Image (cartoon, rainbow, N blue to C red; front, side, top):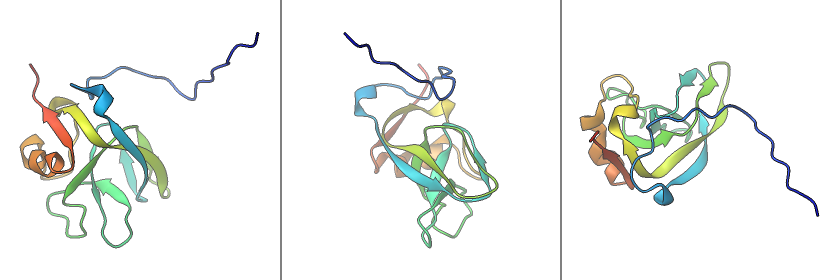
Length: 123
């Protein structure tokens, strides 16, 4: 009988990002734009011109001002574009998110809700 072997690529540190119904999570691979150094839980916006993602900032005018996804892993793209995993649907703790300049939980809630992402307040 053979046994499956498992390999770990990193260290898992539990956090409070995921909330509610974990079985509803949907994620996908995205490209994070060069120059970004982001942490898990960052609210992302999509740049219209090239389809890459960066932290959603309220005053941006390149499309990324509209909240679209939540970053699922830390990513350092300071020296070039990087592929990362992001959540496209699910329930998340608003207090565990990070926001680009000019955004907060209240300003992103509706935009994310229309995409299937629900932000839950701490109990």
